[in-house]
Length: 307
Ligand SMILES: NC(=O)c1ccc[n+]([C@@H]2O[C@H](COP(=O)([O-])OP(=O)(O)OC[C@H]3O[C@@H](n4cnc5c(N)ncnc54)[C@H](O)[C@@H]3O)[C@@H](O)[C@H]2O)c1
Figure 1 (cartoon, protein in one colour):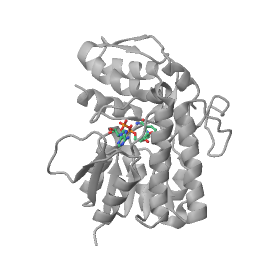
Figure 2 (figure 1 turned 60 degrees about the horizontal axis):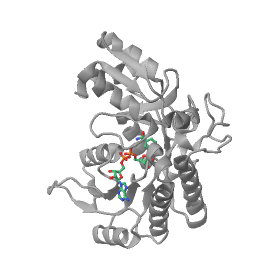
Figure 3 (figure 1 turned 90 degrees about the vertical axis):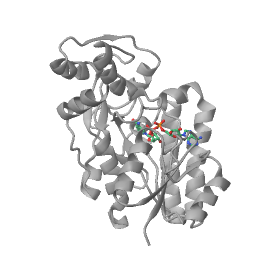
C-alpha cells in the first residue's frame, strides 16, 4: 500500500517545499495548516496543531503512517508571545508523540533548531553534546521538545527523528518570523531597491543552508534504517557560515550598486546567543548528511528568483 504522510504547517517556508518534494516521490501528502490557500486540488485540512482530537481524526481517516510536524512559532515572534509559543510548540509535539505511542502513526519528524544553543555554548564547531542553555523562549521550547522526543523513543519506542536546522534560505514561501529572515529579505530588496537595512550587525555569523539541502537532509534522515539513528534528541546540522556583510559582498559581485546599512534590533541578541558553526559529523556518519549548494550558488539562485 502506498505511504500516506501528513504535513502539519504545510503552508510555511519549509512545509510547502517539503510537500512538493514528497509529492514528487509519489507519496500521498495530506497538507494541514491553520492558514490555508484555496487550492481545491490538494488534499488538505484546516487544523489547529494543538487540537489532538482533530489530529486523531485525520490520522484515522487517512491511515497516515508518518507525520512531519512543521507548525511552530519561530524565534523572533516567540519573544513577543512567550506563552502562546510555549503552548503551540510543546502541545502540538506532545499530541503527535502521544498518538504515535497509541499507534495511530508509525513515524514522526519534528524539527529542532540551532536555537537550542545558548550564549555559554562553544561558538565554533559546536559539538552535538555540549553546554545547552538556551536563552530564548523559542530555544527553550526546542530543547524541551528534543528531550520529549528522546523520552518517547526510550520509554514508548516511538520512532521520532529530528534535526537541529540552521537558518534556512529559500525563495518560494516567505519565512515566518525567524531571526535569520534577513538572509532571505536581503535578496528581494537587492533586486527591487539595490539597498538593504539589516536588523543584524555586519559580522554576526550564523550557520545556514539552502532549502533543497534542508529538504534532502530531512528525507534522507526519515528514510534511514532505524539502526543507523544514534541520536534521538536531534541531530546537529551545519552548513554555510553566513553574516550580513558576507552576503552583501557576494551580492555586490552581481549587483555592484547594492548598498547595505545596519540598524540592529531585538533580534541581534537572539543571533548573538547562537553558534557560528556546527559540528555535524554524527549526521554525516549515521545517514550521509551533506551540503550540495555552496554560498556562491545560493546567492545566484536567490538573486535570480527573489524578484
Ligand atoms: N525556517 C528556518 O530557518 C528554521 C530554522 C530552524 C528550525 N525551523 C523549524 O522548522 C519548522 C518549520 O519552520 P518554517 O520556517 O517553515 O515556519 P513557518 O512559520 O514558515 O511555517 C509554519 C507554518 O505553521 C503554521 N502554523 C502556525 N501556527 C499553527 C497552528 N497553531 N496550527 C497549525 N498550523 C500552524 C503556519 O501557518 C505556517 O504555515 C518549525 O518547527 C521551525 O521552528 C525553521
